[in-house]
Image 1 (cartoon, rainbow, N blue to C red):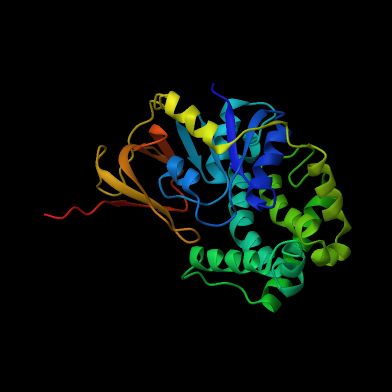
Image 2: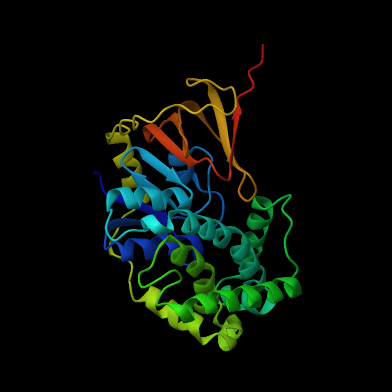
Length: 313
């Protein structure tokens, strides 16, 4: 298997989710730091439109969304397991809740004026403004919690997580699973990136003790890399053979069609390409970039919208 290349930036909470999984599995990986806001020309050379952070590159294969990245890392390094057999269903359901409901409550709490002031304290005012405008564009049409509502929800969610952490070393038992990493990253942002907001943990010490256990797993074996070299890696590689999984047609769109895939809500910029796989769990698009060459860009089914590209007569 080609090297794992994670495109991320330090304060990205979803990137911390994957960095922690890499630590759990003690994997070696290359680190490419991407901009936190648009424009992102090197990102788009590889993804074709998708610009959420992080994404994982393996040669000429690009994996979007941390839910799919976790699956790829599980395949690359099956032990220790992210999806224990007796927890396969509940851990995935919990992780999806944590990556959506918990995440958005936490971030609405975290980025209140006090938190935002700390996050951007060492940056020029224009950087804070650019970040706000970028995230506003990425979340157009989304319903966002107001700060007071977010605070109340976040407190409730922390109490529920505390009940789980009081029972076990990790949320579902003696070892971590995908649920732990999904729940950890928005809380990590509170504690690490906007520590002035971390007072909310005072009532739930079991949560911070559990977070310490996750943090102790580390980030694996990281090597610095740069975007130009990552693009060169893609250009020199061929996409991996597609797994022999049956085509699952839910849209009446045959393989070989020109399509777009975009996130349902946040960051809805579409990626265009040719549909070359639609399995039970993922979509794969083939596309070509002038710098990166022939690529396969992979998305999970859940959370993404597939559409046939409209062609004019």
